[in-house]
Length: 504
Image 1 (cartoon, rainbow, N blue to C red):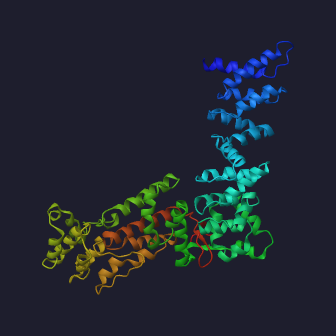
Image 2 (image 1 turned 120 degrees about the vertical axis):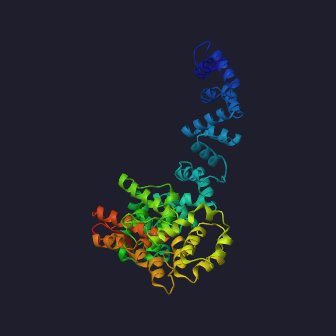
């Protein structure tokens, strides 16, 4: 029998099953209940069987009850569960309870029937948590109780986090009360601070975040709904909350600790937009370590102009360790030092083993030593002993090449180069370049940077100079910049636009 014909028959039987037509009504009812029972595993038969329960004929109702209690097809079970959910009829409730039926779909119905006809359910998927939380307000007390038991048994981790998120978005709802009762908190300490605050667990909140550092960071990341919850508590009259309205200070006025915390928070929450704004403004000792994170983030700025700048920054930092001479420095010719460095990429030297090159360092002239160091720098098998040989070489030019090409490992943000020769300290360390705030750049600063000798644009520290030049030029070309701000406090750290602050 075709599906269309079956559907027509089922619809017809559903009309006949309670027929009261004189003389033939009993025949129609008999035919209808026989057909509906025979097709009980068709979802389309459920409406007729449910109607038969209330037909007023004990025999027909009994057959319908037996049919509904012996369903073997999940689609038919789902249809019966959906009918129960709409009507909450006592007789359907009893049939489902006796049969142990649980719907398979949609998810809301699956959860509802599982809660109604089982004492509790074990959750494995965080996506089910909001569905169970919605049942905390169900009209059936048995459903509410089962939902509460199920959520109260959630293990720490993603499932509790999901329930806490619901509490944060609706701190007056049953889910929030349950979280408070069971002491649930998000694993992320900043998110936990936000939850404690909006659910008015203020004693616990101030024990964790009495300076509002974490709360301000979460507030800036939150959507307007959650921000409104925060403001309601902040304005509630509790004098302890008045500190939330404290001021911010400009990024350039922050301590090293405040900037570091702000960067760590931005990275933890993938807040690339604000990290990029800060990168454009703060010293490269903070900014350069962020570049590889930008590269792998998959993020880019929204405007075409800044996308171009972003790509230029990534390209500059991705260049080889030997670097390139800045355009301003390409006067009559490339620097002699740069020529020695460039010679390190020759095919002839690539054929020489690392050990042989290191051994040659003690037998060659200083210019030849520079070339050998440039050839050694990118090699993966350059060990610590070889690096120390370069760092402590008797000639300063070879030592300088070690720093410039990266054969001597340094941390640009912290390490100081301890060398008796001025040129090694000046060109290898470049502390002024790493400490300068691009947000404070003036045309004079850009001219001073351009006056550096050609050797200063070589290697990793040459990369720092080229990056600084790009950031300074961008700063001067977009004079409308507003300096970023960081929440005040020793351990504060959320970047934000500081409205009203002009660039220094």
